[in-house]
Length: 118
Image (tube, rainbow, N blue to C red; front, side, top):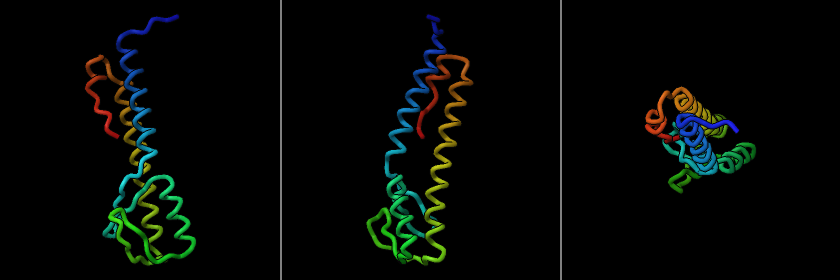
């Protein structure tokens, strides 16, 4: 069995914690600004439900504020779904940046100083 250095152990622990936090984050229901004057819940199931609503041609959506918002189904569904997709992409990019920062750290102190906010 190869003995790990304190730096390797610190990186491993930090990467595991990042992975756990990101998994919890993905299972959540973030409130996402649509750019249309309201926000929607943007979790995985939320997005699936919104895609169904789009296919059905609904002309309203319930926002994160629990209020109904009238939308133009010809254009606004794509805007709403794109905002959710963009949020997801940005979240993954943040995770990858944090992974890179952890892996590039040269001291245990540097690893420990990394804020894992996703």
